[in-house]
Length: 118
View 1 (cartoon, helix red, strand yellow):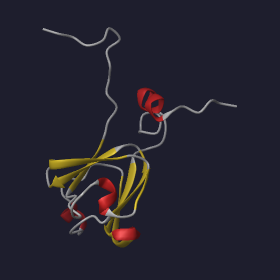
View 2 (cartoon, one colour):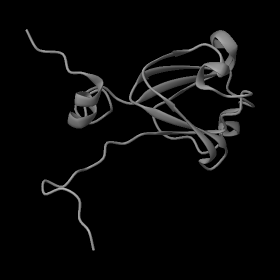
View 3 (tube, one colour):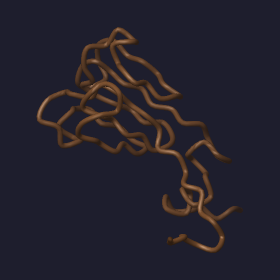
View 4 (cartoon, one colour):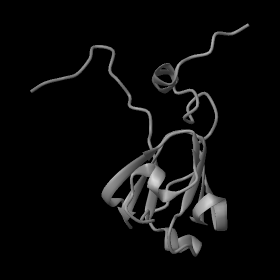
C-alpha cells in the first residue's frame, strides 16, 4: 500500500501537476453550473475567444493547478484554481465572470543548494 502525499508534497514531486503524475486538465464553461459552451484544456490559452467563448461562468479542474486572468494575454487580476469544481464565478472571488486567459502553474525547479544572491 502506498502512502498518499499531501498537495504540497505532490507539488514538490510533480505528481498531479504533469511531471510524474497526471496531466494538466481544466474544463471551462461559459455559464454557471457547468452549462453552455465548454472547452477542455491541457495547455495554456491566451484568449478564450479563440475557443468561441465570451466569458467563463464555471470551471472544473481535473488535474494540476491553473491560473485564470482577467484579461487576454495573461494580464489583470489572477485567480488560482486547484483540483475541484467551481460552479459559479463568485466562488473564485470575482465580481463578474471575467476570465479571459488561462495557463498552467508549472512546477518550480529548485537548485539543490538553494537560492542564489548577487
